[in-house]
Image 1 (cartoon, one colour):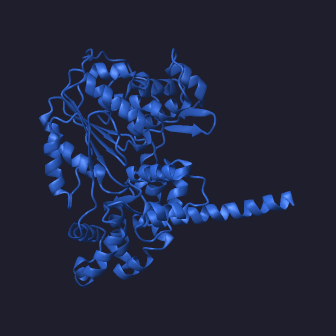
Image 2: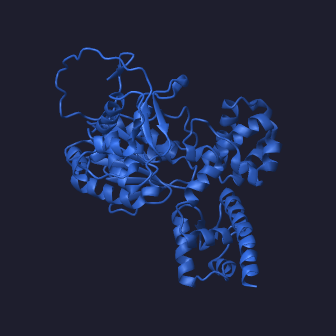
Length: 441
């Protein structure tokens, strides 16, 4: 299948969906009918249909320049609304069953500021390591670093490098299909773990699994199986917490140094159209702003975009306000990285009830705090000392709390987010408590 003479890469199930739609152009085909048609001998959830419909629309460039090919009737199904013409079938030579993966990587950053030393070190450490995980808080720059490493190391693998973006994968049961699709395997939606392992068994491949924290257990199990089955496949993962898989080597991505943070901020001000020459007298203010942002790449980029139009002073003054969580970043960024709030929502949604409660309480502590101070802050929450300590460890593991020499600290933007969330929750609780009290009385 081609578009303007250029082949369109389409997985087996997505192709089957397309065939089912264009056989009945203009008709809204119910979801159940599509599922029965595409997965005739397999029981699948509706999420599989949505997953491959999304991939089909992306492959067809559906919606680009207002050109709509597939329409959705909410709660009913899908229909093909493009123009369909029929031509004589042509014979094509049979396709080789052994289709090797191409080097499929996102573009490199125009400049990777402040990570040059880590790039060299991790490139050396990755050699011979079955699983290397780059772990760190939201917006630290894990994906950008992993992409740079993959571009450097990929040519050294006979079967290239394959990048799997897992941020859009909604549930663990879709992990294997997503990996299979990225590898170019046919019938990816129905691919079992054995199909993927058989394919990788004799490959020399660099496999990048990006943004895995919401699929942490399934990804850890998959990585262990791949390492055991395919010794020449190396895995590079990015996550907000380590996988804790067998033979995993973890690199915790540190914040940018003050000088690198200032350079990064200035670079983003320049690319956003700001006057860099005018920043010469603002270096102390920029340094303080970057310190409040904990030296993290994404918050620095978002603040720099705002400073390019509003100036350093106005940006600094608003930084501690909850509205700064809504400042927009790049339009082309992943949805969970377009604002600081979206990025932190992603992390917060993965927390347990106890973790949310504890994070909300300790975020009100402005300075570093000890376990005893944290215990006092949650004194009215039914948590014993051991459970609290374990919860703080979990929050540290998930890069939401920092620990140094036995003292804990909430990064500034996480503290602001957690405080706002706790206040919003309390505002909801108060009317509910009052209404309940009135009903009892």
